[in-house]
Length: 52
Ligand SMILES: [Zn+2]
Image 1 (tube, rainbow, N blue to C red):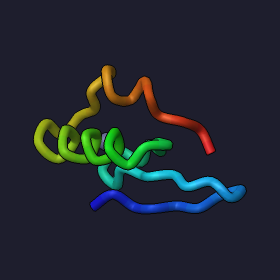
Image 2: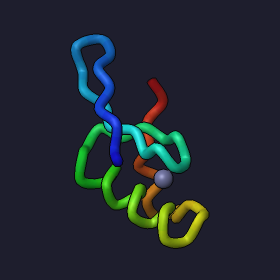
Image 3: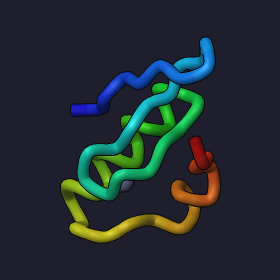
């Protein structure tokens, strides 16, 4: 499950497997799906991660 987080009036989405945050729900869900399947992160996906 992707977790929805609100911070500074912005919404972020967290991949619960790797703990990275994303501004887009779609990319967070992609990350979650990847992490669950491969038990590791995809660099192509995590490069879109943001720091909050
Ligand atoms: Zn992930």
